[in-house]
Image 1 (cartoon, rainbow, N blue to C red):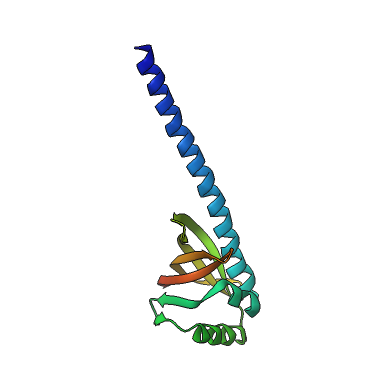
Image 2: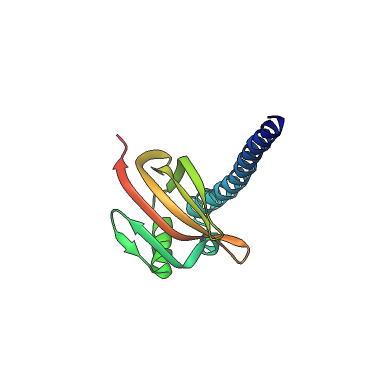
Length: 153
């Protein structure tokens, strides 16, 4: 009986240690992806830092958008970036909520909701999914999906 109790306690503690270890890994990954999201949007997108934007985006980017469809051209994405930054108004993005999940040894998937602002006035809300790849010791956006765009009233 005592042997069964010891085995049971060992298995129970292993389960909780595994969960604790998993949560720690998840928190570390979450912090890394939140940092990358911040670099991508708070710095590159919001401040029109094209050099940083190019570093974060994959050369083989696939960007899916519910308004414009699929874009597989990084050159086209850079033209759109430059066009947006040349506008007489400032378009920025603010993260509202997000979740991050590990994708094996490839990278991570980030899902969430964000709003877009023009001259600091909220104008649109949408959802997104980003596939982050960890390659050559850095995080890059491999795939992005932006959908469910709705005007804010």
